[in-house]
Image 1: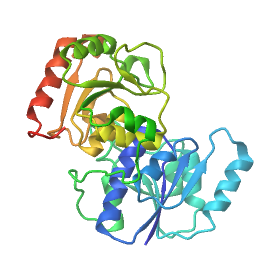
Image 2: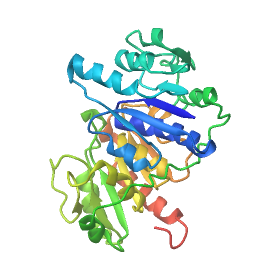
Image 3: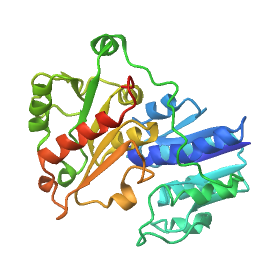
Image 4: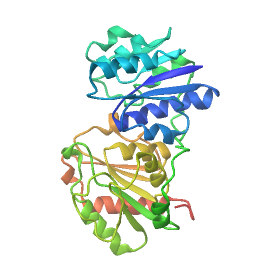
Length: 314
């Protein structure tokens, strides 16, 4: 069986899609999975270890670039095409692909639902988790039950030699202080860094893209890693502390112990999955303001996760 997944962005949503499609790969051995993704994010698919061919969608590439992508996709024939994006351009790619079975989300925007058979409910206003919205795709393919406990392994994710040497035999707490939206950023990561350094039980690692603040005493990997290395870095952490962002969803998919910080977004829809995941603790700002989450509560939650790990497991 051959499946084409159309999910160009964003990174956190792509991780959700990978968790769904991974079930097909595990339950139906021999299934070939290809993917359409925005250029620049393709390394996360290579790290997954089960996506075979990657088609690059160039945002802002213009009409001719889009036509070339359509032609490239049409060189192959698929049993199923799944539009997980639900926007006009992804729907056009779905409609023009060579397949008799083309499905997309029922609450797609930009008139996308005219281009494919809709699945699921129009649930944009309902409190369904982003992953639960995608589960009906599995039923169309023939996978009856979604196993939320099956980890996403990212078998091809490895760290570069320099980073691997820096972290060799270290127990570390991993901080992701960024988010694409400023209102989702917890403002006390520097204070958390200083407080954790005083305990001296763990090394501290900071990762992300932007070096806007100094994290003195930590191993600063911001801007120094490929996207394909991120899962392995997260896998090796004793605890991850993250805002609502893509690294949080990677940590959840791997089952890494995680402190998830939420403010304006709803964890019921966008939080770690499943919400009752034993390896995760969610701290939510009661008034939606990230500054309302106290440094003390984050410190206590980290201690709780460290203490609940089986002896010798870090």
